[in-house]
Image 1 (tube, one colour):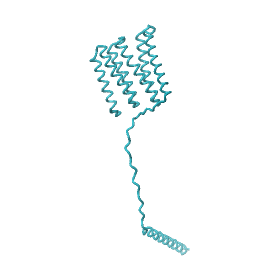
Image 2 (cartoon, rainbow, N blue to C red):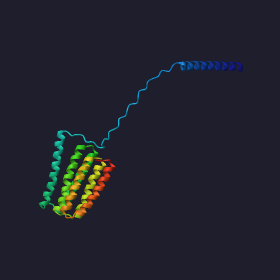
Image 3 (cartoon, one colour):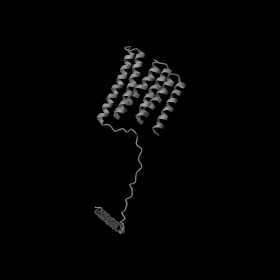
Image 4 (cartoon, helix red, strand yellow):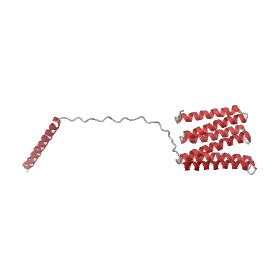
Amino acid sequence: MNDDRLRDLSETIKKLTELVKSLESRVSSLESRESVAVPLEPPPAFEAETPVSEFEFSRPSASRVFSLLGRSILIVGGAFLLRALTDGGTIPPLAGFALGLAYALALIFLSDRALRLGDESGATALGFTAALVAFPFLFETTSVLKLVSPLTGGLILVVISGIALASAWRRSVRLLSWVYSMAVLATALAMGFAAGAPAFFALVLLALCVATMLMAYSRRWYI
């Protein structure tokens, strides 16, 4: 029985030896063949990517433009209605001032919400309308009607402009940042001269300029 096992083992070793020799002959035949050079195509040239703004506006249709224009007119009409009620005595002056301030802030928040939802044209229209309502309202109530002191008006200007600019910066919308910045600049200058406190409003304007500069550099908004 042991002889049978030895015989089977020797036959297995013999088969393995033959298999190894067969493989060696195949490898040597493959090595002897001439290698064919395969031309390699050059890697595709990568073009430099053009910088794209983080938030791009698509051109709205004509019907959309008229719709947004009509909505903006209604919003401005609401602000004039609030002023008329205040001038007529229906609403007390300070209550009218508080409602007007809330009205302006609501427009800024609605613009931010539209940006969050991806409604670029609607957000832009609301932002323009918010600037058109908020900053003239603040100038009139502070410098013309004198419902609040220049100090209070300047602080409210800082708060409103900070909220508006923070919304534009957070959503990375350069256009609205320019709109708010120009509105703040014009309002601060007008309030400073009309209220007879140019030094105070110059400090307010300086602080806002530093803030907008830092925001612009953080977003790489270079001119």
